[in-house]
Amino acid sequence: MPGSLDPLDVGVQIPYHFRCPISLELMRDPVTVCTGQTYDRQSIESWVATGNITCPVTRAPLSDFTLIPNHTLRRLIQEWCVANRAFGVERIPTPKQPADPSLVRSLLNQAAAQSNHMNSRVAALRRLRGLARDSDKNRSVISANNAREILLAIVFSRMDSDSSELNHESLAILSMFPLSEPECVFVASDPERVSYLVAMLFHPSIDVRVNSAALIEIVVAGMRSPELRAQISNADDVFEGIVGILNYPLAYPRALKVGIKALFALCLVKQHRQRAVTAGAVEALIDRLQDFEKCDAERALATIELLSRIPSGCAALASHALTVPLLVKIILKISERATEYAAGALLSLCSASEQAQKEAVAAGVLIQLLLLVQSDCTERAKRKAQMLLKQLRDCWPEDSIANSDDFACSDVVPF
Image (cartoon, rainbow, N blue to C red; front, side):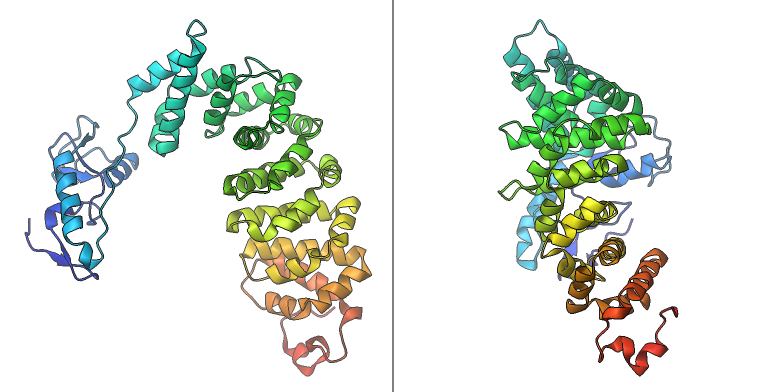
């Protein structure tokens, strides 16, 4: 192998043996395979996950897929990083090692054994929770050891207002995992289990509330049965609980993320969207719309469009002073999906209210829609824009671009 050093943009050279033979990048978590070769953990795990069963360098068969941390090399890399920090090199962190399957099994058994003292069971769950938070790899190890079945049994072991810390810790771990459809049905088919999760939406601890909302979203999204999905969305106070999480007054990004995922999943059940409006979902969505990150903003706008399709939702949206200006502002700003949902909601509002039409025109929607029609957005978004332009035809001002000579040259389909 060549022993030369390749220059970096930062003006420093990485020693060849500090580079992963697969990615050719500085190793952050060097591990050694059974052939004696060392690779970065992420690279060799990806190599094996794609079906390769040979060592990338030697081409020898990997008779054992155990990855042994190369602590010596990792320390040398860290020392090199520190020595070259003047060149902009950051020290690689000491990686946390994947959870030992035998330890995970032991902790699960300790938590599940009703003969154990409550403090011992809670302590085991807290360790499991810490492991699950650390990495996807740990969550895979935990899930592979029948964890979901054990945790579901603990979560619903005591469904009353005095549910213990044991239930709450199990709920926190369970909210990190996807559930199979039979597991979702296990929760949704029992009204007592559903009522318990809804009750937890009003717990004094915001963490318990958010974890309960996360599990509700996982269950609703994980089932194909429309009857069971409707059963959850029809539960007393479920929308009030979710809206309460969205309205949480302190900065808590996870509350917003989980809250909008749960609200969107529940609003997919058409016959119960009225209950979301009654619970104040419209006001919460508009008030927090600018606080969402991109993916969550798309969900929020999709939910707004769903609610705009029912009369009460349309009326509630139209009555909020910020609805129309915000929707107009969002067009072509966040993403193609966000633009499509915003245009769809505006179409519903302007179809139902002349006042909304005037507000949209005053907010500059005509220029936005003309740009949208000529953009690379989805065909659905363009169709909605064309329909909205037609809806707003009577509101065009005398000197607008809609009545100018340039309009005839645009890509808008003639009405």
